[in-house]
Image 1 (cartoon, helix red, strand yellow):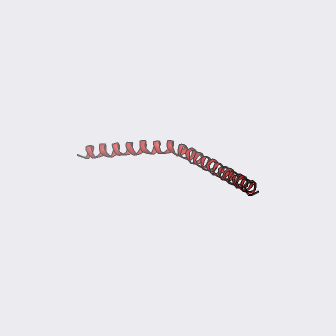
Image 2: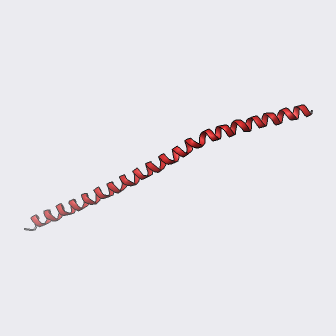
Image 3: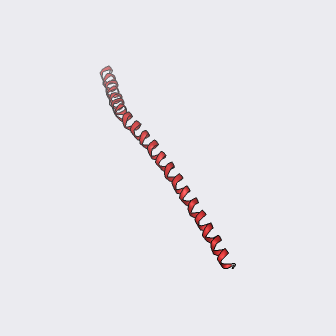
Length: 75
């Protein structure tokens, strides 16, 4: 009975060791992934700002074009 218990404890300790080893293998990958997420978020922010600027320029150009058309039509 005692040997069976010891075997079970050894089996559980082996599983814990394997899980711990795998965990420490994954930690660097997790850190790399977090850094990549930060980079992608920054790129997204920059692209969003650029798109917003382009949209504002387009709207400004459209408003000028509309105003010029109104001026021509009112003559």
